[in-house]
Image (cartoon, rainbow, N blue to C red; front, side, top):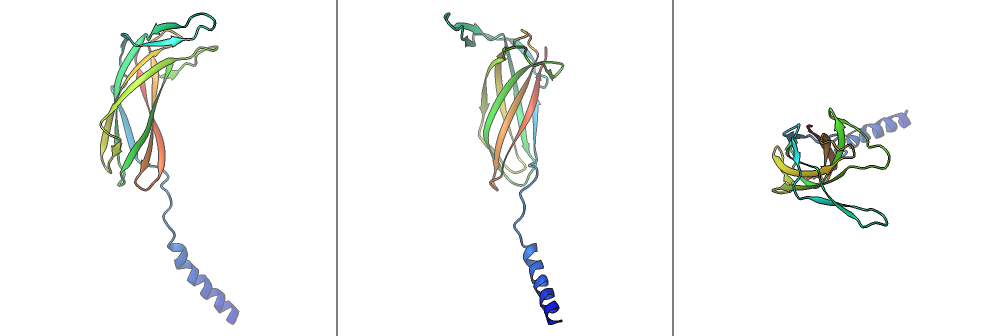
Amino acid sequence: MERCVRAALLMLALVPASACQSPTEPDAIDVTMQANPNPAPASGSTGRTYRVDMGDEPDEIREYDWRSSFSVTLTNNDDVGMDITAVSVRVQQASGGIVIAPSGSEIEKYEYNSQANGNRLEAKGSASMSFDVWYDLPNLGKESLVTVSFSFMNDDDVSFSDTVQVRVAP
């Protein structure tokens, strides 16, 4: 009997200890991203070039066919501030917002420039980044899908990433 009482007391002593564990990491960080305009227009590029390796022949310098500009507004819906730690852009040829993979060894050629006023996204705050994208597609079209990827680190040292897609209209 005494053994059962000791076991019960030990179990009761452990219950409060288990209730004092540190909080778990959040499953999702609540940041919304909105591109403007979406779809974004494309116009003929002017003056921005890229190099094409021609193997044994001299490299070719080509002008990008298209240019598009848009901005992304990030809204932090959480009670914890965060830093934007990285941004990347990917351009893919598309039709109706559907990515059309290039055939063979062809690839999309692109580069971008971004502008931001800072890397901080305060709790319940917002920030905006603008992007200029120059690109050339294997199908010679101008319709594309631009994916902008953001990485974040919040004030609780939790890192996470998210993406927003921007359609570039034909």
